[in-house]
Length: 285
Ligand code: ZN
Image 1 (cartoon, rainbow, N blue to C red):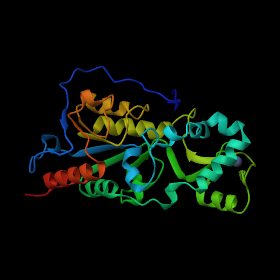
Image 2 (spheres, rainbow, N blue to C red; image 1 turned 90 degrees about the vertical axis):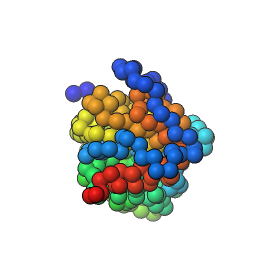
Image 3 (tube, rainbow, N blue to C red; image 1 turned 90 degrees about the horizontal axis):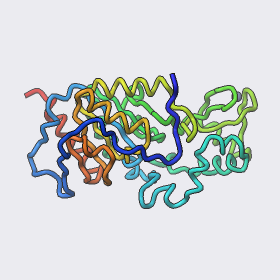
Image 4 (cartoon, rainbow, N blue to C red; image 1 turned 135 degrees about the vertical axis):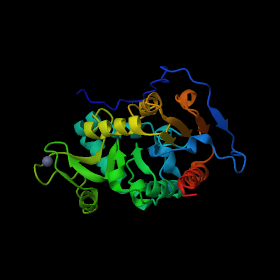
C-alpha cells in the first residue's frame, strides 16, 4: 500500500464529489436556547477529528492562525521537515532546544478535551487527532480510543533502528549537555515520535481512522483548518458513508459545503454544549 505522505503547505481544495445544500451557519450568538439540533439524534457511533484549534485554549499555538507558529516564524516549518532534520545537525540542535521549551510540557487539557471525554463515557467514541500534545488522553479519553495521525511528542524514535523511547529521557540528556542526543542502541539520529513533513503516516493508524469515519453516525471536526490530507478527507469519507458532518472552527474550511452544520463559535463554548446535547439525547427518559 502506498502511504500517505505529509507534504509541505498543501491546500487540497474542497472535496467535490457531492452536491449538498449549504450548511446552516451558527453565528457567534449561538443557536436559540433549547434548540437542540437534529443531528444529535440517534448518534450511536461518534467520530471526532481534532486539529490545533482545540489546543490553543491550553496555550499551545496553532500553526496557521494569525499568531500561529508558522505564520510568525516560517523557518520553524523547516525544523519539521524530515530531510532537513536528518541532513542538518544545526537544525537538530535547534529542534532539541525547541522541544525543551515546548508549551506542551506545561499545557493542561481544557473544557473541550474534557467534554469529549464525557461523551466517550456514554457513547461509542473515537478521537482522531492531528495533534501531538497528548491532551485528549490527559483530558480523560481512553488512550486506546485516540488515533494520533501525526504521532506524539511524548515519544522519541531512532531514525536508524526504529527504537522507541520516552521523550522525557531524551530531554533529560539535552538538559545535561547533549545538544543532539543519539540513539543509545545504535548511535543513530533521534527525533520526536511525530510525523514530520515528508514522512509517511502510520498505515495502521490511518486505516483504523478511515474505518472509524466509515462507521460513524456523526463526525465532529473541531479546530482543524481541514487543509492537511489525509486527515481532512476523512470528513468526506464520513459523509459518503452516510454520517452527518458538523464542523466547529473559527474560520471557513473547504468542507463547509458538505457539512450538516458549521459552528464558528469559540471551541471552548461550542464543544461543551454539544457534549451536553449528545448526553441529554443518550440519557434514559
Ligand atoms: Zn537506533
